[in-house]
Structure formats: structure tokens, C-alpha cells
Amino acid sequence: MTALSVSTSSAASLRADVLVIGVAKGPKGLIVAAGAEAVVEAFEGKLAEVLTTLGATGAEGEAVKLPAPAGLKAPLVLAVGLGEAADGAFGAEELRKAAGVAARTLAGTKKVALALPTDDVEAVALGALLGSYAFGTYKAESKAPVAELVVLTDRKGSKDAKAAVERATVLGEEMNRARDLVNTAPNDLNPKSFATIAQAAGKEHGLKVEVLDEKALTKGGFGGLLGVGNGSTNPPRLVKVAYTHPKAKASLAFVGKGITYDSGGISLKPAGHNETMKCDMAGAAAVFAAVVAAKRLGLQVNVTAWLALAENMPSGTATRPGDVLRMYGGKTVEVLNTDAEGRLVLADAIVRAGEEQPDVIVDVATLTGAMVLALGNRTFGVMANDDALRTQLHEAAGAVGEASWPMPLPADLRKGMVESTIADLANMGERMGGGLVAGLFLKEFVAEGIDWAHIDIAGPAFNEGGPFGYTPKGGTASAVRTLVRFAEETAAGK
Image 1 (tube, rainbow, N blue to C red):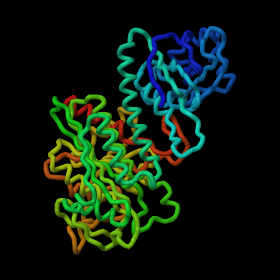
Image 2 (image 1 turned 30 degrees about the vertical axis):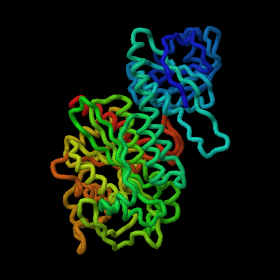
Image 3 (image 1 turned 45 degrees about the vertical axis):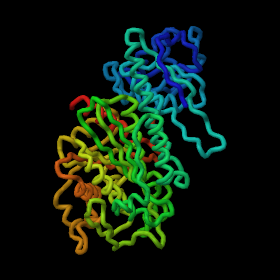
Image 4 (image 1 turned 90 degrees about the vertical axis):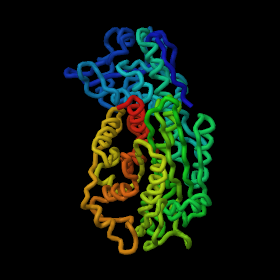
């Protein structure tokens, strides 16, 4: 695991294998960002000229190496692009991305010093920690991540910088926990093993964990979870992970879709659509990581994560299109498509979460391909039964660097879903606006008087392309930061 610390040493005097600096696009050419003053001096004021000769432009994602001159203890300098310079100041996301690019570029290095602008120390630290992430569980040989990252800052802000690095460490480690879960092969991560991981984390961090196995789910009448899990030899689980604070004045419930593998069931997915379906539990991974982070940060709010875990497989015992499930709480659902399974397990968990009367329920799920069509691969959709809540979550996402977009819940789309002739609801409605129909379905299971929001992370939860910024290929831990930010705001009475 990468070690992360803060130092008030100068960039020139700190011993490291590589010294990272920032450069940006200026109106008249390359600009060397703040934090690299000692490096500029070592290059006798010609650093920008040397970097330009080497092809550096300061563009986002760029990384240029050059040997260090006399005067620097580090033998190598890495210049990373910060993008367009705006009055010499850089936003948190620009710093996160640049630090992430540096950490990815320098994988295998023992010690890296980050002499980037100190506009936001936490952003630099978090970006570097996330960029250093590597998942090598199944490889005989894999390149190790950076062993040690040191964020340089001045003495004046050293106390605040240390606190910022400590907070970034918690967020980074929990996001990387979620990434590990998403990247784990489905033959190793099933509902039972996921529940065991949650229990271990609960014991480590002092969280209360309760697991309902298939017998308890049957006794309790959790028809959605049981119906989805019927076709698999790995039975479903509902896991409750609870954090309480003695001074909390509000309580939050985070509900996560945890389909550890989604074949589509009897409504089998076509070839080419199954290979990444281990990621269909990314919502459960996100809410799990968020509640652990809330505990480690000591937030003055009660937060409970509900992990709705099942494996959706075809077999002689699998739920069929046309079957009717009796959900937890009593509603019946006609299953028209077994590949619309996420909403079924979430519905059970939402009803159960509502019984504890939280102030807000937020569910997170890789729920619909329709949301990917609407918003692409890097933006998640936010729906809610309260406009202010939807806006707050959208703004919380923006504040922490996650791309989101507020989406509506049009009443006219509900009609097709409630027109089942034999059940209270159908699990499918109109094809157009499918992501919104899924949100409307979930809304039917929210208890009256409880504010609720739905976050569809189907696009950004799993990166099938190349790595960028601090985002790796594979699991991304989408929505974790947004949930933690929302919990912080709630604790602050916002």
C-alpha cells in the first residue's frame, strides 16, 4: 500500500527518487506553477524553455521527465500538465488529475515528492493516492505502485496540510477498497463472500454489521432479493452496516445494488455484454466504502449502508419472465424482464431501510444502460422525490470532482409500469426514458414522508477504456466521494 505524508522541506533539499512539479498553458507559452520555485532556480530560470524544447505544453494529462540539475537532491524531475492557467490558480480537480497522472506515470518508484501548487493540499494528496492504485491480485507479475508519496507544503499551513493529508488518506483508502471489490472476479466475490468482507471491516472499524442469509430472507419475505438470486448456487444476502455517532442529529440510509454477477438471468444478455458484469455490485461497494469512511472521519451523523447482494443467473430454478414476486412490504411485481433485476433487490432494501425512519435514503446503482446512453461513460444521473435533495447531491458531486446531472421523474412514464394486469407493478415500463422509469419504480417503495434520491452510476462505475487522471482502468469507486460529502453536509446541518 502506498504511504502518504506531508513535509515542509524545500523541493531542493528533500531526498526523493522523483520530484513532481506542475506546468500549465499560459497566454504566451508554458508556465511553471507555484511550488516549483526551487526547481526553476536550479535550472537557472530556464526550466520553461527546457520543457518547451522537450515538447511540454502544459496540457492536462501530459507528463514529461527530465534529469535534475545540481542543486536538487532528487535525480529526476517530472513535469505534469495542469491545463489552462487562470491567474495562476488551479481548481481542486485540476490538482487531483495532475497528481494522479504523476502517480500513474511513476509506478514502481520508491519515493516521490509532490511540489505542486498548495491551493488544495487534500486534492493533491487524494489525486496522488488514487492515481497510485493498482489491482494485481490475479497477476503473477505486476508493476508495484509508488511506495511513498510526500506532499510538500510551507510551514505556515503545515498543521492544516497534515489534517488534509490524513483526510485524503481515509477517502483514498476507502475508494480503493471499493475499486478492489468491483475488480474482484465474480468467482471470488459472491453475496456470501461480500458479506464476510463487510463483517471483517465492521470488526476492524467498530461498525455494527447484520447479515440476513437466504433463510432469514425467506422468513422475512424479501421476494425481490430471493427472486433475483433463485437461479444461482450462491444465495442472496442483505447486509446492514451501521455507524452511529453519540452527537448525531440526523440519520442517513445508503442503499446499494450488489449484483455480484449479472448474466441477465433467463432474459440472457447477448454476447459481448457479459464480460464486465462483475461490476454490477459497484453501488453496494460505494455505499459500503462511504459508511466506513464516515466512521473513520468521525462525522456527527448516523449512516447506515444496506447492501442488497445477489447473483443473477439462468437455471431451472431461476425467476422467469411472467413470474410474480411478492416484495418485502407486500407489493407484488410482475417480472417482464429478468435483466431488470437491480430494481428488484433495491426495492426490498429501500423498504427495509425505510422502516428505521432515516431522514434521507439515497440508493446507488449501476442500474440502466439507458442512463449511459443519456449521459455517457463519465457522468451519473441523480433523481429524487425532493428537488432540493436532488440539487444538493448534484452540487455535492461537483464540489468533490464527480460529474453528475439532475434527472426528472416524469409522472407520465409511470403509467406503463403500473399497468400489469396481475400484479401491483411490472418491473418494466416504456422503453424510451428507461433510466427514468427505473427511478420511478424505486420511488414506489419509498415510505411516505422520507426524502429519497437515486444515483445511477451505470456509466462511470467501470472504466473500460484507458486510465486518465487519477482514474484507473476497471473499477472507479464512483459516488463514494459524493456520499461522504453529503454526509458531511448533513452533519453540519445543511
